[in-house]
Structures are given as structure tokens and as C-alpha cells.
Image 1 (tube, rainbow, N blue to C red):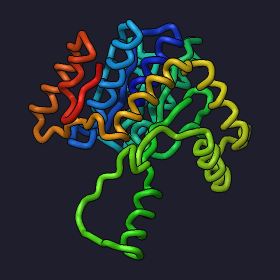
Image 2 (cartoon, rainbow, N blue to C red):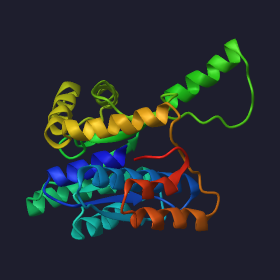
Image 3 (cartoon, rainbow, N blue to C red):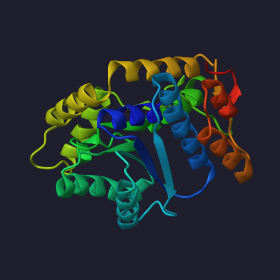
Image 4 (cartoon, one colour):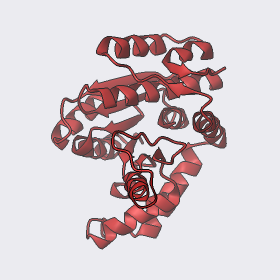
Length: 262
């Protein structure tokens, strides 16, 4: 879903390149890589565009200076949108994007992940991917209280509302928490953050892009398509290579365990 949004924003900004500043080359990030690239290619094949795709591993989740350095390199290669997938490291991505706009006059965007991060810089972060830890905690408590309780790993996806894209209510809520903690910039209020992000989304994420996002989201929630989880690095690289070379919607099915897109 974030790949569709990124590609749409890049073209709305007059560019043709999206990027990601990722943490370490580990299985959870493989899934992000596949999903992000799938979304970008899905957008291109539906809209008849061509979007360049850049992905870099920084090797760390804890060093904003590294994130800033790597993101500057991505921007120099033409990236209009940079997806932060590196924890504390991609806080440096946000700095790089803001500085790039200030020094070059070229508007570029960053995208956050897990918590809504728009409040950090609402003029340059119009959207964040959601990881709903609150939903996971509530689900675990509910299993204990109401049963049945089973140990092990439970995956909460789009259908279970464990992941997704933060809506404006979520953006405002996180801005309120930041304000209460004294972390929101003094010139901002939660309402101003929400209004700024709403305006950016209205300007740079067109209704056609939202339609593509919702169509794919519906297919995932309904179980009509299920993405592969690569078990080895070779399998991961094979899927990425095939997606990069995709020339038709049918070619994207290499990333799917179940179902197809057309």
C-alpha cells in the first residue's frame, strides 16, 4: 500500500523515483522490500507510468547520522519520496529531506513507519505506515480473558487491523501525545499537524491513487491474495529481481503465495 502512495506522490511532485532507507538485511525487512516494490510496480502498471526504485540497507536501526547520509545519497539519485524503515536511523532521513528542500528548493517527502510520524515534520511527512501494537496487546489480553489462549506467534495483518496506513485521526492522536510529552515543535499544535497532513494528502495523493490503495487493501483483507514469506535470502533476492523486471500485472504474481492481480 505504501508503495502505491509513494509512486503516486513522486509523480505528483513531478518526479519518477522513490526510495527506502532500511535498517538491516533481515527477514522482516525482506517482506517490507517485497511489499513496497510490489506497490510501486502495481501503480506503474495500472497508471501507465515508469517509476525508478531505490532501496538501501544502512546496517543499523540506531544511528540517525547514518540515515541522514544514506538518504542524502538517495535524494542525489533523484528520489522524490523516501520511506523510512530503519527505526531511529531513519529519523536522519527526515532531517535530510527537510534540509534538501531548504537548500535546493525542491520539495521532497519522507514516509514514516510503525507509529504515525507525521508530527515530526508535517510539511515533509504526509503519510506513515501503521504497526498497531495496541491491537496486538488488546488481542493478547482478550485471548487470556475470554479464551482460547494459545502460545506461539500470531500474525495480525490488514484484516485484523494490525497494520495499515495511519488515518488523520491517528495522525492527530500521535501529535497530541507528542505535545503532552513536550516533543511537538512549539509552532505546531495537534490540529495544525492534522490540517497540514490533510492538505498534503489532498494535494499529492490523488483519488485515483487512493482507489488503487483501497482495491489492493480489499483483496488482501478478503484473502484473495496472500504474499509470499521468503524463507531464504536467495528466495528473497529472486522475488525482488523478478518484480524489478515486471512488465505486466501478471508478472507481479511472483510475489504471491495465493491469488493473482490483473
